[in-house]
Image (cartoon, rainbow, N blue to C red; front, side, top):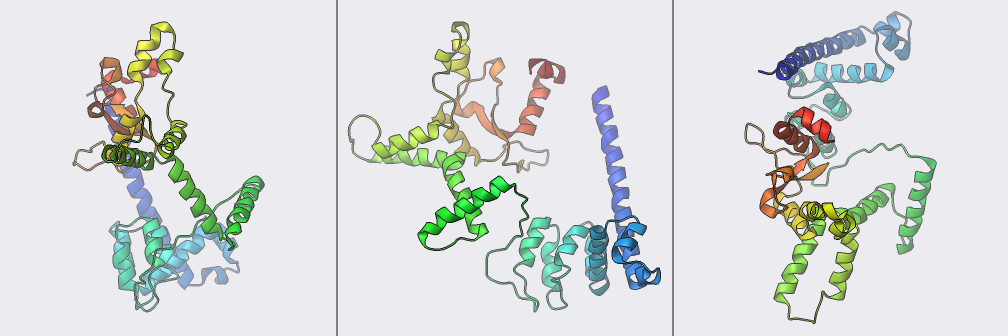
Length: 324
């Protein structure tokens, strides 16, 4: 085994031990804060909440969050079982602290098991105090810090959208902006439009040479987000062949995005697929530097982490660093 891998495994084991101990300390801290809250320790020592939190080494917010969770555990002991089993976190229980009641605790505690904080927030938005699950879309709180210039853009967007006769909420403004952005830039949407155009062209009677005006406009708009088609001409004479082989046509890109569903295709040892949908890159199965072609069968989506990892495995860390 290489020295690098031995060092990596050493760090992995150290991290496991450290974070296991850290979790144990966090739980012990939670139980101590709960006991101190029950004893009214801050009042007994003549301190306010902020002073007492600082006295025991916590910020006011962290102290209050742990007090909330300690009270949840006190009144609903099942929450402690979930926490100690690793099926939820302190921060997740803090989300439901103001929501949980004897009538809805089973719905909340069963529903939050193994879920992310965001999923717990969405669940809590639908659960009523009397233990019913509302048939409505989940709600999420979003905290955004913006500059003055960005707020002016929001105000202008509100003015533009209000021209329809109704003043939009901040959520509606953001949603519309994202909707427009995705319609223009989402590779999956662009690929779907391209496939729809091809299907329509194949089934429709000929309308003369070239694409229809609408299709031509779509293709021109999408071309602004793709590499130029004249890379070979722009390159020096000795590099034209290289650039021509390297270039991936828009139609091939579209088919790759549709086939792979806009998600990294890397498979872990247990057979599960990498869930990453951000920072995606088109990877050559047979590497380009080893003669791999820019063809649909040789290309697939990989997240940046796995694309870089596979290149390191194939070329070696040193060679890859020198190449970059």
